[in-house]
Length: 202
Image: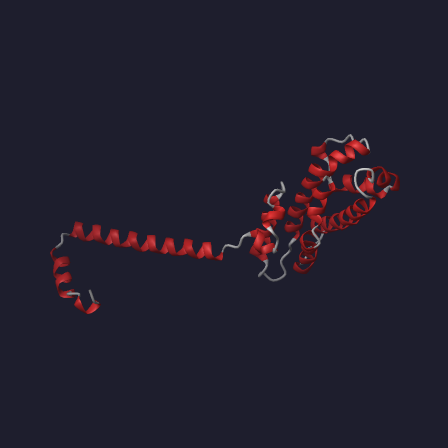
């Protein structure tokens, strides 16, 4: 049926013969259809615009999917995506979430080694990032830990944690610029320091 085939005069006549109640029902039905179409269109648009955090970070899901820290990583990405186009935004919250992820990895993978090799007696749930950095500042501890994995890995972890603690301090007491966040993310994902923590326990 073509648009030109529609008899609008006949439609008008039918509408004129409807009761006010029937007209109101038809108007309500039309309004509902329009709202549904708008909602559907918005949902499709949101789905198209939504970016998976693996894609956002340019990382391989197979490498990271089994890490127990995906929630804080995703939260950090959500904050960055929300504020990245806002001029002079403070990205300290992203650093806090990434630090939370790092701490959880340390508790999962490094704490058992510290406990076995260094008689680390702290409650794992109350440990902080500094608690994992401090023992690595002592060469005797590096030597003891090297029986589990080579000293180069522990020195690498020490240097990494020093940078993390510095950024965490900035996030807590100062201001983190967008460019600084990108440098920190490069450390985590391009240099794969998050995966390094897991590899220490293997």
